[in-house]
Image (cartoon, rainbow, N blue to C red):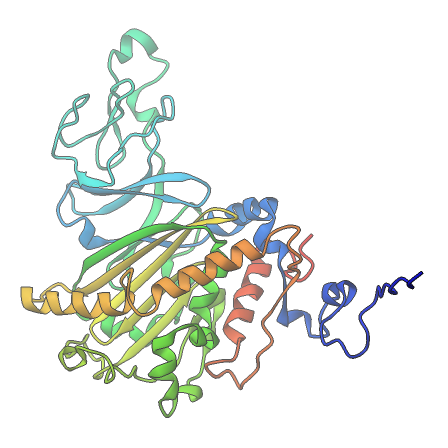
Length: 418
């Protein structure tokens, strides 16, 4: 009878892969350089993020040029499924409200954007009207109409008792509209600090205007997608970057600067467009920005300002769950642009940041695939952020500083979060 082959349970010494025990073992690195993947997959941790982070920080939600005239509005949402409506009042002031009727919590404003000057079928012009029972609110959030109020409520409820929930709002840093759900928060300038000083001349010298907007729901944890904004080691992901900026002298010498509250700024080596079709037309810029200039700031917990020569891009990520993120991307130029200049900015913008541009689709794909891979039972255990290159462009200091801020606000370790 032929002998049975022996069964080897443990990899032999000449096998380069690791055993299950070796794979699961915590890497021999400082805790500051290791992230436990539970923080991307645990629904309880996500709910805690909504409470401790997303309900406490300043968040950009739209641009003032999306509300050009009094009584213009725009609806959106915040993490935790909080619907909001941003309205420019008759006094020209921009205010934000929770988009819920205090009567029975029906959604009040249902369109993504428009003007309150147009009357709804169930209400009057200049008002936000809940279609359910016809309660109406003005652009300051005051309840101005309750059908048959006295007959039903007598004197137990008056209009002044049932105004809309107003949300702290500031317009700043290039005309972006920022909100904070925490009524007791400090001013926006305290939160941003000096993180946008590197581009303040470009943002605030003259009025800006949105010219492009697109959004999409990405099946990824918001932190995984935001990681691609924080570090440039992932330039190896992008074909165009490998063929252009990464071969330029000075690319690897760019340095990161980290700021309080989890923000970061990237060094400013000018992008190289010479190898791209249409590069000779990329002549427009922003005030004080050199030819082919670049500015890049990421803001905790998940937004970014990025200027490349002629275009400002503002990214906003709104987590819908631990595995889904709404991504909003705005292209912004100078308000005084001629039609020809605006068209050129649009072409410049689309070539890099449009849905089929050089980089965006690759970033989105990678974050989505990574989220699919990092899930309970997959074997994923640790993410490493251990590159140290004197804070230069492929150093992961920016990712480390992000998770330090995350840990500070959450009151739990990103290495042992449970």
